[in-house]
Structure formats: C-alpha cells, structure tokens
Length: 242
Image (cartoon, rainbow, N blue to C red; front, side, top):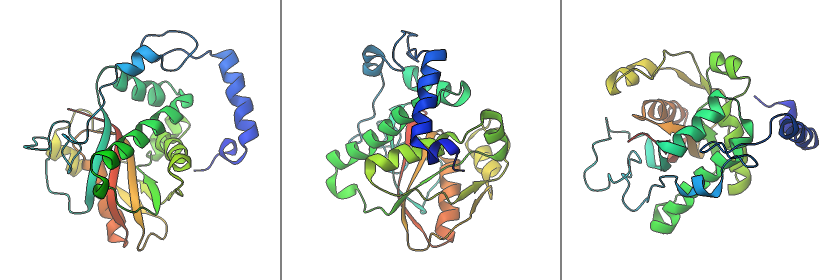
C-alpha cells in the first residue's frame, strides 16, 4: 500500500516538519516535550536478552522451559522480540497504532533491528541468510480506521537499516478481535485469514510484526508464505506479551 509520502521523500519531510510545528513531539513514556522517547524512558524499556529467550516463540527467559509456546510451528524458524510488552514498550506500540503517531515508525524499526542484531551477537550461527522482509499487514478495516498500515511503514524503515527489499505480499482478511481470546481461540480466529498475493517461491523471509501474544497470527502468516514456496527462517516483533 505505497503512499504518496513513501514515493516522495521531499514531500514526506515537509509533512513531518508541518506535523512537528502543529503537534510538537512529546515522549510516549513521560510526556516530556521535545522528543518522542526521552533517554530516561528509553533506558526503562525491558529489553529481551536473546541468550535466555525461547528460540521458538521469543518469550523472555523461556530458553530452558518455555510456557509460552502454545503449539509447534514448523513453518517458522527462530523467533525474536526486542522488548517485553509492558511499560514504555506497551505505550510505544499503542501510541503509534492508536494515536496515529507515525513518527514512531523509525523507532519501532530500530527495536526490530536491535532484536535481530542481539540474536547475531548472542548466537552468530543462528542468524540465517535473508532475501527480503515481509510484514503482518493490517486488515482493510484497520487500514481504513487508522489511515495507514502500521507495519508496512516499520518494515520499510527496517529495510533501509538491514539493506533488504520489502516483500509486500501478504493480504490480511478480516478476522474477529483477538484481544479477549485465549490461545486456542486466537489460533482458530485467524485460521485461513492470510493470503499471499505475489511471487515468493524460494525466498528466505524475515517476517515482522509489532506484538506477539500467543503467536497465532505469526504462525498463520508463515503457513501462508510456506504454502507458496517461501521459507521463514526468522520472525521478529517489537514486543512480546509475557
């Protein structure tokens, strides 16, 4: 869903400047003016150390005996998350999505880069070769409500940092609200809700999302990609519910 701002960087910068003038940046954590995330709140983010995280679902401290894995996910390789979904990290995601603070997209992309590079530092052999970045897209309803696809913007920012192309190939069909559902209900709710609209055969993809709760959406999207001949050796999220 490319937008005019994505096609015209100059226009995008002009709009950003206008937004800063009309709605000056304030820290998502403490409301301090002048920055989207102040150093104090950034230091308070609950970073996940990949040495101790579950390699199957990205849950913090799940490397030995994880209680977060709800079902096997042969379609997915390694899963990493940057932060635990609490405190400032939770506010970061919510303000971006629900309060339309698009200027946070680069910060969320940095969080994803942090997770991927942390994995490479902890386990150099665990980072697979990658061909492109795919993302969990918004449903049509969510896109119309927000006016933008939140993970598309983040994926494009991440692509610049990792020097990879974006594979905008997933279509997310309507599914019910996941927030009040348990693990099995979430899995059933999203079953068959993703479609691949593009050629991905043989591609090794990094699949990204904002938050992993049970991993149902991530697994279902990976299944759709794998069914079309892609590989998903790595998935990453900004935050992980724990």
